[in-house]
Image (cartoon, rainbow, N blue to C red; front, top):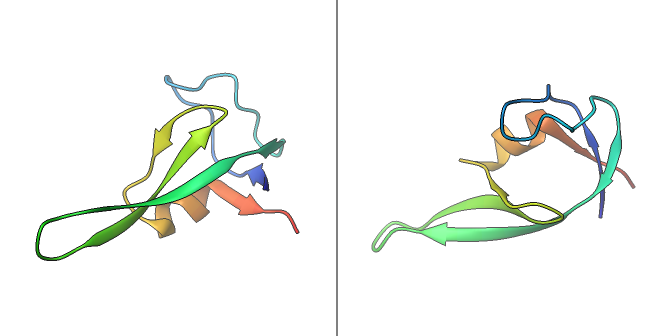
Length: 64
C-alpha cells in the first residue's frame, strides 16, 4: 500500500524524504502473554517497528 511520509528523516533512515510517497508492507504484530498488545511493523522495503498505531500514523499517511 502507498503511504506518504509525514515525519522527519532520522539517524536510522536518513534517506526518507518528507512528503514523498513510498510503497510499504505493514503488518500487525502482537506481544504479551496475558494482555496482548497490537503494534504495527513495516516489513518491506525496510524493517521498522512502531510502539503503537498512533505513532505510526504520525509519521505515515495512507494514500487511497
